[in-house]
Image (cartoon, rainbow, N blue to C red; front, side, top):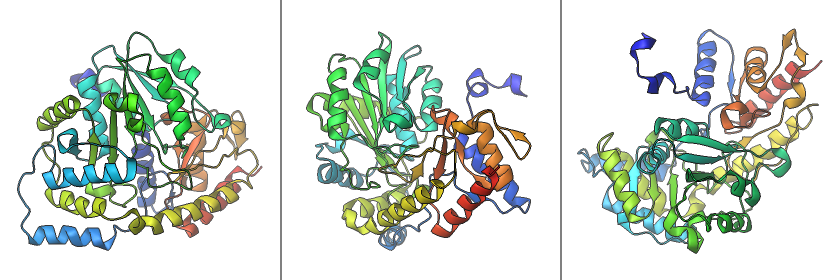
Length: 396
């Protein structure tokens, strides 16, 4: 039936993270004990004060279609959050609530990118950026970095990647998959380059902002010269352990926000009514309410770095945020392990799944072919067991 489907869907890659999770589930269903470290999903329960707000919304009979761009009360809470946490002044008319931050990103790309426009992706980047750009018939252009630069690009790299066709730059800090964080100074240096190109817009994905370990989060839109050209995307999935609630949002210039609302109105309309009411409670609460999760992630980061550091051939840095480790495993390329030849990161990740029964994700999907992503959004016991299995599978 493939020839009856559109070129659009035939050319669209499957999400690598979701594909690995599906493969792991299949093996699990066959009775194999798989440890899943592939998905970016906190293993905590949603905090009770958020769940109670959802229960209250049910009891208050919230059950009708919501405004396409979100409840006005939620949009005001988002404005308050942007001011409190990021020093950004947005009005409710500049806010659009969507079915997850992924839809927010897709809306932005659809309303800004024309066929043939270049979109610069600062690599490593989240797997869906490239596919979302391709769906808009844009050209995803990678600006690569590696572990030697802490997975961050330089202003010169940005300058060299810009062409007459460049329309949008997508940045993400704290970064998925590397956990790297751009400092205020580093973002100011990148902005200095972009100031020379007023027709280029910036999409700043800040979904992991609260999951950082000592480096203050800095929003790109806080740079005065960038405010009217930046779309700030965020959501409640990661920091509030609300992945399944599917609420994301953006702050943008009015004309972009209006266009995103128009786009969303023809695709999904408004986001879930109960989840929106719960999100008001999440965003109105002080960040200290979720500090216990951040503290636990920091402990797990220390544990996984210590354990992986004992495996010869794995090269590590210390991520400053998010809940991923992104080791360079290129020293294994060309080697034969347990009778299996490893040629690239994808084969390495499959080898770990089949031999160690640990699910990770190939760095190829993130624009970093020498790496794999390992999530430490799992219990310490699971992490210890997983790294012990990996160590055994990689031993000569």
